[in-house]
Image 1 (cartoon, rainbow, N blue to C red):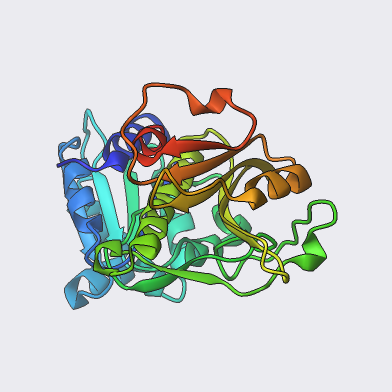
Image 2: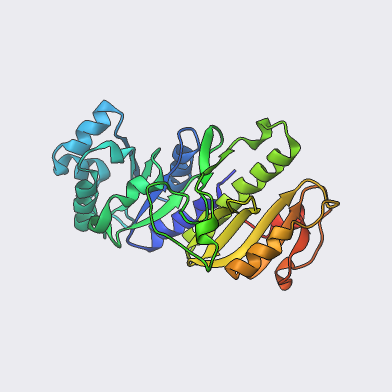
Length: 300
């Protein structure tokens, strides 16, 4: 099945000048995605930094790469160059910049790697305006998805974000979830983990398609007031989410408390056992219970 980002990347590479960056864990499907994208191009060259022969071509004379790509021939369509794990090369930023600046009108470039997106961000100004970033979701392993609200979920990114009088009361510990939520035995934890994974995918997708800059957090104070998730848009509170296994569970009173403190527009208690309801829950500004089937249908 074609992945969500297939259409986005194919369009970006075909219609725009920027390189496309895709990051994610090993075995998550980056190579499969690259092969799907390559079907939109008349010719494709795949180079993996971990392959000795491929590395020699990358480090060799530019003329050899030009020959391999057919850039010395008149073509009706640009070829696609896929560079996998190129960030392991100590001078990868300069390499990509030079390659892009020389062949941006002749060549589409797709960069993939197992590194987190913050590795690519280390490129700084040297790659400014030259790439579109995308993320591939992982399928297994334990990883930290969220930090407390005062920090972005990417650990290397700092930047204090305070809202009114709650900042000093917030706990600092990161929360950890499983990408493979199906292995969790506790139903409550499984439900929270399930929604966490879908929300993370959603905020990545909303950001990547240009709807704004979205971030995912959780909220917990030192005196144990807590809400499972908090989504911001362009560094402004958007909505809060509490996850419960049953519709019979009482509304978490801290949804209203955090909504008042942060100014979030919406507050939802997502319940796993309720049937789908054909209604727009974004029409409700007060905290409200929403079936998970309805809530997740609005995500990606």
